Image (cartoon, rainbow, N blue to C red):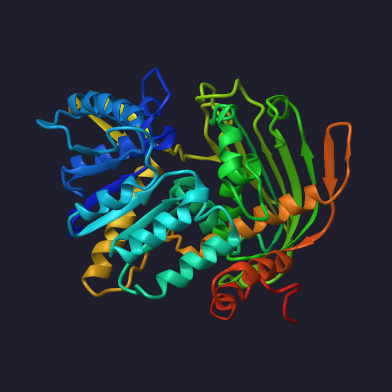
Length: 454
């Protein structure tokens, strides 16, 4: 953490992820991963003790302020490092614009609002001269992502990063080391499984759907949790998806709330050659399961099930299992000593101090280290978790293709099954809708391939 210049922070959004809105109990969930992380960064001296939190209403601001006071006591700060910015009356989704005017340099903005709003906010922040960290996905639709990248071209001295925090999970990085060693040869298949409670209360879906736009119109589990492992496959292998070969969407309790979105989405995909790993110069397949069937809707009270299994051509299996509260990483059934945390807020009894540890915090530490390097005129290097806007296109294109697949056929007994959708078709449609297709096409060259070069 040495040689990192402390930065001023503006967090746009004060919801469940940003500030634990609607969550009771103890630990990180109560305070939200981002609020807990900001307090740890202030304790580390990486953020200045004047973090601006922008809320769109006084209700959200009140929740945030009360929880920030609790964290101030827990971390032993003399003063609350959070500075609130919110409309005194009503709801103002553009309050962040005024908040940005009081963000001092060097400063950065964290965008943690519903993804249909990402495009306008990110572009406004870039035009205001601020570095940006956006929670995933980069934007609600692929064409919105492309418009963001086109705007970013005008600001080469600003950094745009997407918070795909699982890239900083130590187990994921160990898996990448194993893959790149070539010890077990090429990858044949990757299987991913994610199932958890619906974090967003069901009654919010109707208003969210009213805000959404574009061809995806998907607020289902593949978009909100499944895309993490789409990005992880891209991160682990350097490969790009070629097509969705088939899919299935199962409907249940979400539809019971008069919202036409699935509880479970399953898909099979074909991936192309690796960008950087000569051990992966072959196509491989993947299967994906993303579900909201664990526990009751609302703030998560049960541990999610997250698993990824990689099968190599020699039959070796490497499995990372985050089911329940246990974490195991096995290669050839031999367990590896890795126990990562996402954002673990706890008291260190050796020092009698509270601290927040995990790969969410590490994501922001690396981001601030990147900012320091960029501001010193050096290109950010040596950060394997760094996800820029162009890399983030992969998950957006994949999830839109899955949605098009299962929406393309008739439903039978509460299940829709879908057929083949080329990633290139999704990209070409997005290009026709973005602000400058000729320029944006350069960001999509590998996603536009329908097969691998011989």
